Image (tube, rainbow, N blue to C red; front, top):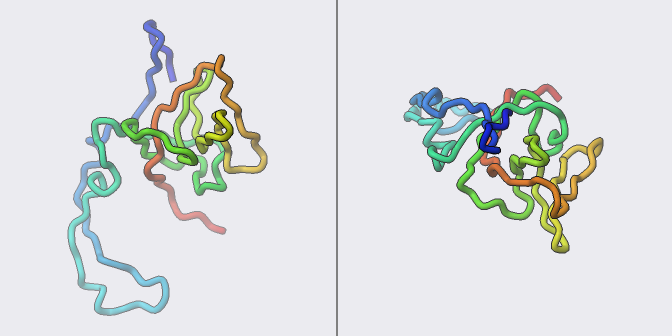
Length: 149
């Protein structure tokens, strides 16, 4: 992330136009015994329409680090972030703190704000009044490959 001469930050994003694809969609898949009748139900699914509610204010970021593994967010996952959403208590957000972007759970408690990791190896960050702090957006979806347990 780079700071521009006017003091704002430039975030590298993947343009939404690059994912506009209509794909085959089968109604369901059994996690138990297969159902032969479901093999032939097909519709079309637009991933951008399903995953992105506000295209003009949505961007993607790739995760690095392990502070959010307890929330199912792993290194190299892609986060779908909506900047038009007002963050609510306990939302997972992208925050800008002291010039650095981070993904954490936003906590409001006792008139204080915290950024809480979802990994016990990391400590919550209290946000004092004198720190540079801004919520960039709210995580709406996480894209990752299945992981081996």
